[in-house]
Length: 333
Image (cartoon, rainbow, N blue to C red; front, side, top):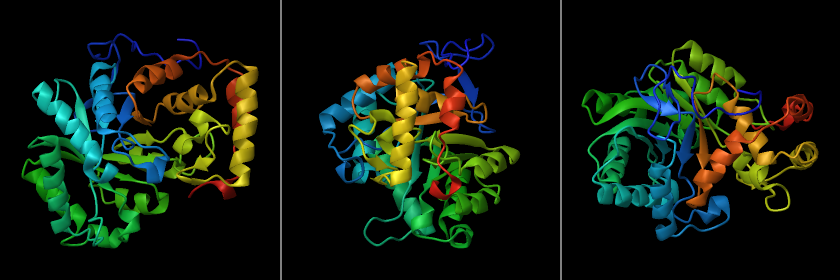
């Protein structure tokens, strides 16, 4: 494999999906997943976050494309589109008679959107809601989602809290493995040290623009858990470029980020490399990252993701991009 090219064929020693994408061990869970995970946060017209609507019909066709594509790992959440993302997935799964063999589906427990309750009781309700929408009685991976907006780490780990409920649900056989999905790095590190979480998903903090997840990655791996890197495009700015997107990590991009993206775009243009390809492959190149979560909003994005993941990138592009990394003060955490 040439430097900078993502090898979808595997090394000949790993199990592969029916379409040839190599599988990797997801930490100590026993699950095997592809190095790209299809994210479904934008399904369900979450225009307040992403700036554009996605209809139910397009959402379901996108799920069908994801299941037909080379990736076996799909990520959703109770909260995405106020449940619309899980509903899209569930409708497709019902038509197919369940989750296809070899596909790993992950979802997340979320706080009550009205009362902000994130107690153990709320976690049980969240899981029940998700399973109902998905038409399933079991999910192999369930993440605790965005606790930083509702709880401290101590509250999350306390008796009667969400982590205790997740452990009980795992012991009852309702969920297979417990993950943590959140942005705030310091709090994530506190929670990871509990040893409960087998998978950690962090977003927007390990990209061409930000390295604040570095200590979380190292701590996660030291504890034997798997690390998933979500939002490699920084919420879209590294995928669409400044001509179409001025939002970074779901908020207006500050000047330092705008300047860095513009400079990175020039480097990539000179090398005939899509900026999005460099952003995605930056994550794929790191062997510490088990899978990179790439959000999709329409069926064609599956093939586009593969094209970006396999686009040749000259070796000298990487140090040129590294030199443009914004200063630490401009990172998210």
